[in-house]
Image 1 (cartoon, one colour):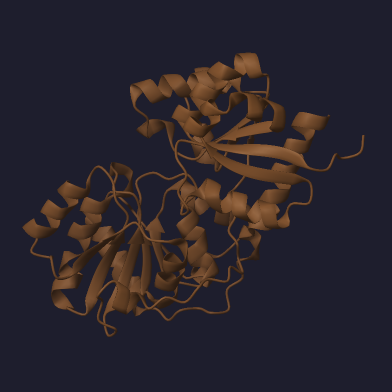
Image 2 (cartoon, one colour; image 1 turned 90 degrees about the vertical axis):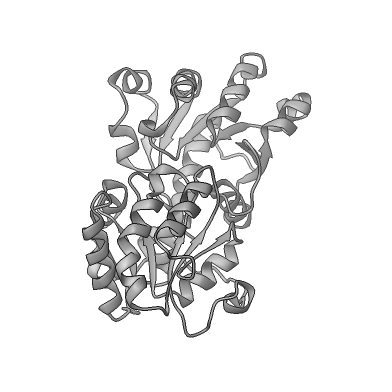
Amino acid sequence: MEKKKNMKTIYLVNRITKTSVPWRWSEYFNKNSKNNKINIVDIKLFVKNLKHYKREANIVHGHHIKAMSIFLLLNKRLKIKSIYTVHGSYLFLSKSNALLLKFIFKSSDKIIFVNRTLYSVLPQSYKNIIKDKYEIILNGVEVDYKYKKVDIYQKFNIDIKDKIIFHPARFVEEKNHIRIISALKPLLDKDKKLKLILAGGGKLEDNIKLHIKKLNLSDSVILIGTIERDEVYNFLEKCEIFLMPSVSEGLNIAFLEAISMKSKIVVSNIEQFTYPLEVYNLNPEQLNITFVDPLDEENIYMGISKALSKNRNLECNYQDFSLNIMMKKYDNIYYILFFV
């Protein structure tokens, strides 16, 4: 059977944000995929225009539990082929979202995990549901992304002589902000030019601010809110260290972007970070990566100290993480699911 042109896929999300993984994927796919048009849609708009999407969509690819659950209820009538990508760990789901995930597993045609760990931690009953319909596809990154230059020092009121430790992450428990700040205190107290930049927001923001105040680090830890993708890349270019010692992850896109920018990197030694390097047989030292125990403040401190003392290796090869490789794997799944 010949591959049909103009296949149309919906990326279904809770809400659209231009820094999100689905947004980045849709932008890249639409520029580079020859046979598939991606339309990113939030669940409210989808529900409002059911007849249109039933007529126009060949596949719905969900990325968020709430949006996908609503769609799958409606899909009993719509009969659209469906894929769901698991980006986060089952271990950090609420009870209600865990139940919804089981419903998604039962009702979707295909389940994708962005790393092996996200599958491994599932209860056996969940694994049984998807045993014949899941795959693991590692996230990719646009390795030659042409970002707009931004004066981050002026925009975010940072002294150009400051040395930046950059941590872009949602303010949630698994991102480990409290332990990070505590681990960094000796370094921040010793070197007043060293600054921890926290980019993001979330439910723990007030707790994080209180912890910063309690440790008397208000001049050394700077919260800049959620930032644009190009601003992330400018920070990766300028920072001394990209820091992400998370307790749990999917496959962190910012981590891959930091690799592509040849930043010095400190991340946790959890499988979500180590597994991609094992798959591609890559040496973390050559990629400027230092691994730390995310539950040990002293180990985080030592890892950051070690990374600060290193020179940045600008000769590292990061092509294995190409978004184009990932895109081809998804395109093949779309084709098999709908046309075969």
